[in-house]
Length: 115
Length: 110
Image (cartoon, rainbow over all chains, first blue to last red; front, side):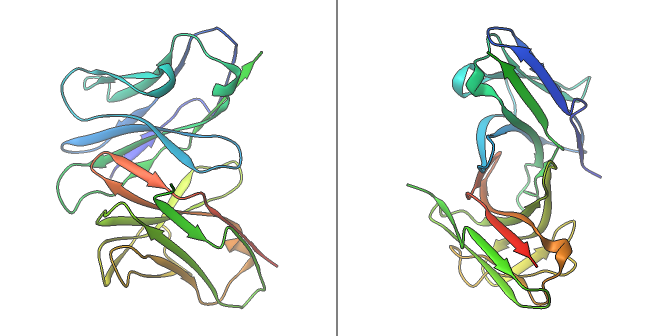
């Protein structure tokens, strides 16, 4: 069974602070991991993804994520947040084999950035 | 330009009525999905498809049907809408590792 766990439902930080949003997964086999952002009232937009290679991947707007096979984690980070980063962030996992592109999403973490 | 387009963007339906939500993608992707999102919650997969004329059940298919008449189009059908189906519905297409979402359809069943 594929599962994605985002342990923090809500995270609040001040503008300029760093932030880490946590994601842990359970999946057998080779996977893609990805992060998405959803601003209030909008659809989800892609931030970044990981498949192989350098475990630290860079995304849009200064976001990066680090893959850890030993911890089954793919945490999202940003060094200095802006008020516009306030949104809900979703982590997702999917298989890589043809016929197995079913994506499983976490419940989301709501990030609130205080100006 | 939007690559995944949903219509309508919002709809009010009566209990017991039939509702069809439409989705069109210009990404040339094989995989398409329908998710529902309830207020303050994550995404739940209803149906998906990886080839025209074929659909697969997701995690919550009860009360929903899907149709994929072409690679570009994927519809979600509620034959007998119920109050519990009030939610925001997202259509998406995907390539390996990345999902492209539509803007969503807000469905209210009264």
